[in-house]
Length: 185
Image (cartoon, rainbow, N blue to C red; front, side):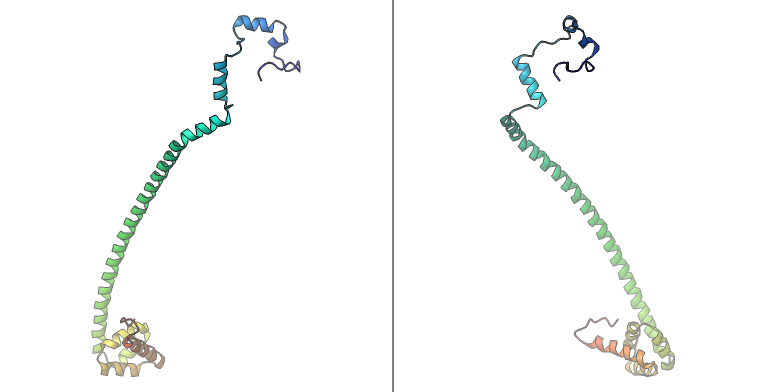
């Protein structure tokens, strides 16, 4: 609002109601002269009242700088994400190495235990070994029976329960099949 709204006396401030308001304001230096053409141009520039070509020219002038800044920010974000991914990869590789070490130690222990079990079952009588092998997992029982001498393996299988002996025999047979893996378990 440029001047006081005199349409309603309730909206007028006390000094605006007086007929002496303008001379008093002029004496106090509060009344400003009309702005010059340069001042009007400056006001127009700061208030956003510019022409369409000036807006397009301004946008054109800052477009490259804005694009470069946007690319720089995106590059920073990508570098940050790449660093996070690299950190996660390093953690995963460390875990993988830890698991491979653990699996290697486990497999070595299992070989020793299996060899020990085979030696134990070699010394057992077939009628004693059969019930114990029947209670084991079929794959482990088959691995042990495969490592025993054939005569002793046959005697143990004949002493085992028929269903369990058939399961162990089928695992042993599939181990001999060239289309299956070499691990009988």
